Amino acid sequence: MELIKLDLSNKNEVKDFFREVFTKDPWNDDWSDEEQLDNYIVDLMGNHNSLTLAYFDDDKLAALAMGHIKHWYSATEYYIDELCVKTELQGQGIGGNFVNAVEEYLLKQGIKAIFLLTDKDVPAYDFYKKHGFEEHENNVAFVKWLS
Image (cartoon, rainbow, N blue to C red):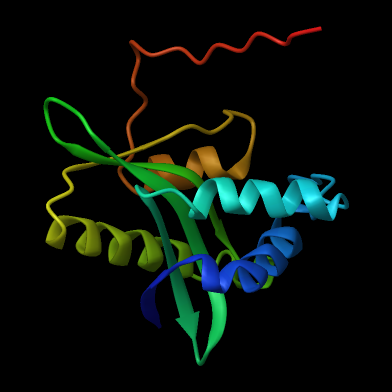
C-alpha cells in the first residue's frame, strides 16, 4: 500500500470512489445528484488548506481521508471531514494501516492532532475508538436547519 496526497486533478476518481462507498450500507447516502457531489468534493479538495490523502493498492484506490488543516493556538490540526475504505476491503486491517500511515504523514508535516466527527450508531464509531481516538466530552455538535 502507498499513501499519496491527492489534489483536484484527482477529482473524478475521488468522486467515483466516494459514491461507491457511501451509497452502500451502512450509509446509504443518495449521491445521485452529480452537481451536488461535484460541489461537495470541490469543497473538500479545493481550498488552500485542504488535505486529501489516499491509500493505493497497485494503482487502485483503497482508502481515502479528506479534510483540512487548521492552525489552532495549541497546535496545527487535521480536521477529517470524510474517511472511508473501499467496502469490499473493510475488516481486513486496511483501515487501521491507513490511519497509521496518515498519522505518520501528519507528524512529518508538524501536525499534532486529528479531529473528526462521527455518529455513535455506525461502525465507524467503534473503528475510531479501536484506533485510539477519544471522545471529546466537552464538545457538542449543533445544527440548525433553516426553513
